[in-house]
Length: 201
Length: 201
DNA sequence: ACCTGAACACCGTTCAAGT
DNA sequence: ACCTGAACACCGTTCAAGT
Image (cartoon, rainbow over the protein chains, first blue to last red):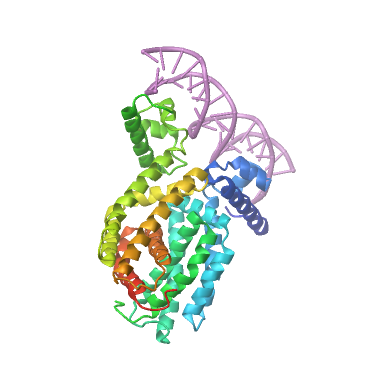
């Protein structure tokens, strides 16, 4: 859909995404009706369908917001000269910046995304981007002898991303409070994993 | 609902859960209609509502199956005298026994569970049970000097469960093939984390 | 108790009609 | 292009009626 008024298009889409996100968190994706979203956004159904192909399509916008958020969070890794300290700060920031609503919305999105092939590809691409960012940071930290140079940087990056994914899973089940207690031991385990000499493959 | 015929009750419930699971994997929870489940199970809507309070309630049965599955998987940890080898075998078994359908169904369940408080409590309890099992195995492995005795066993267990959760997340996005490549480096990282001396808190 | 299927209130989406 | 709201095909759930 080519829009005549690009400004309006952008602000309307943002308003619809905001209204839908709030509704999804409260009631869940599939028990939020279009009428609910219409009420929160103060628009008629026809207007929403003018900006989005379907209710499911609204989620694509949410996924793109999430990508932006991740990139901002990881940006410091690209220029740091102390990988472990930077990464530790990122973990702390996750606990501060992620809310229970974010976790609920994220769970909603993942389930929905799994049966929209083009959306799934988008989420997968976001994840690969994150991995690549971490792998590059690890490579340069190895070059400056901060991390064990025997480690395969791609595998190590996967492990690091894996642990953050696991942290989010546990936050989803047990709440964000619970996982802050876990951060210190997680950081020292990471340090041991990434700096220790040994069979790094 | 007190049933007169406990046998029938059990087999009907199992048949409905099987029909529903298959449908949820194919079409997703919220685009599976009761009519779909009726067709696959070859029952009328009234019959299904005789055994389950609602469409969402069917998921409780799926969660209980998942709990059984986890307990079976982790059972060897209770009696092993070699924690790392046992755990490594469990990781291998996950890759063999988990299918793409299982991952899709699991994602569906998590999103749905998050807004049914009693179901959420059930999932949380399953997770705590897993954690407790791993923590006990770690404690006895520390007693026999297999693992670093300075580690806090509860925190170490959280880390181990965390990494498995992370593995499942990544399998959901990138497929099970991708994660088998990751297993060797994950195992050696785990070994380094759990055996190495250091600031274990 | 167990089962049927028509009936009820409601859903996502479309589209003729307006500006 | 942008917006409205009635209309359409369909949904989860109930319930009178049967055995």
